[in-house]
Structures are given as structure tokens and as C-alpha cells.
Image 1 (cartoon, rainbow, N blue to C red):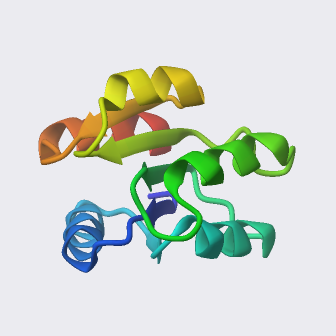
Image 2 (image 1 turned 90 degrees about the vertical axis):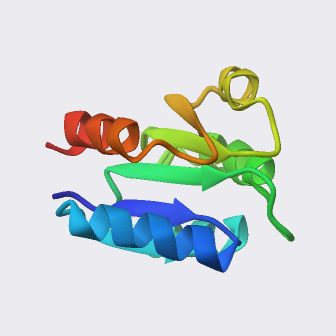
Length: 119
């Protein structure tokens, strides 16, 4: 199924998400921070969905989202917050994302959402 870009700085979380998605038939790309993700996207990679952690060093999820929304080439890519450090629902509304998942993420809910968008 269509590619998903995971933007997550914590190695364990990034690897766990990538493994879960791969096991469920998704192509996965990963970035360790928002700056790396912007480079990947500006290089032409077009995921069907972005999973965005908020708390990261360097270009964090907030800054990434502001830059994403300002760039017409990538602004429309559905983006979901994944966070344990913030009120994910409130952050989702403020950042105009398509939704949010609170860590620890419920695998079934994540896969069901991605299947709807990428199926």
C-alpha cells in the first residue's frame, strides 16, 4: 500500500512504527526530524500519509507543519500527529492536521485509519 512517512526522533518508536506498518503491507520511509523530512519531501517523495511526532530536536513537529502548510507542493499530504508529550487532539486542531494518535499508539486504530486513506 501507498507510502507512509514517519517523522520520529526516538529510534525505538520509529522502528516499532515502521515494523508495524511494514507488517501490515505499507511501504514506509522514515525521517529522524522535521528538517530531514522536508528534504525528503522537497526531493520529490510523495507519501500518502505523514505520521508526525511533535517533540524533536532541531526542526520539531510544529515547525515542520508550519513549513509544510506554507509549501503548496506538500501542504495537502494528510498528516497525523503522534505524541505522548502534548495534548494530541488540541495540537491537531491548532496545526490543522487530519487527526492525532496519543502514544502509546493503539495499533488497530492506526492501521484502520491508514487503510482508509491508503487503500
